[in-house]
Length: 216
Image 1: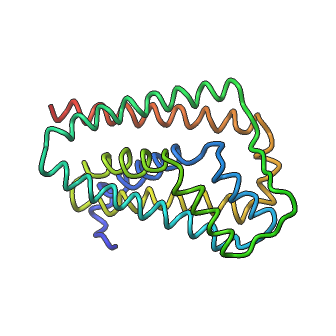
Image 2: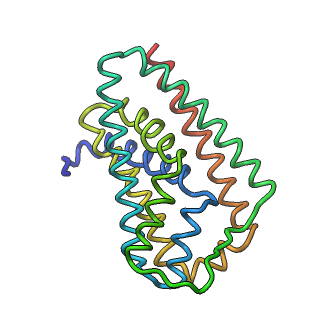
């Protein structure tokens, strides 16, 4: 994916918006993150687990953007409705993150001393990723509908930004586990992180709302 330098001013905001949107959605206390962190701490099949989780997110995001773009092309009026719904969702999500910041909890890693084969590790990663209904709401519906509203030439950059967020986060969890584990075990750290997520989600909600109102 290449672009002329003169277009960077257009590409960069789309890439960064997708990056922060995706980070805000996936950076939360949950079973998938705990599993990736556990594998990182045990140094078992870390690369395979990280790549699987990141690729799964990328595929779902791309499918969402492509599928939603076709749906919106057939029904332009739906774009405004989805933008308003997405803004409301992000506002609520941001509010929940700010509430979590008031009652922070550490990320607990469990699993004992049982070692996993590569196949078993990937099977568990698949279960934590694909059997969670929220992943489809986040990647396919929300991220997909927002990305589909970008100009056709920029949708690939939106997918790239959102996918980069997944790769960076899961890579940090897996390969930085031994360094990050004490940090993740501190409620104060999650308090700061949730506060940042809440503010970021509210900013994105405001941008999405402005986009919806500008198209009316």
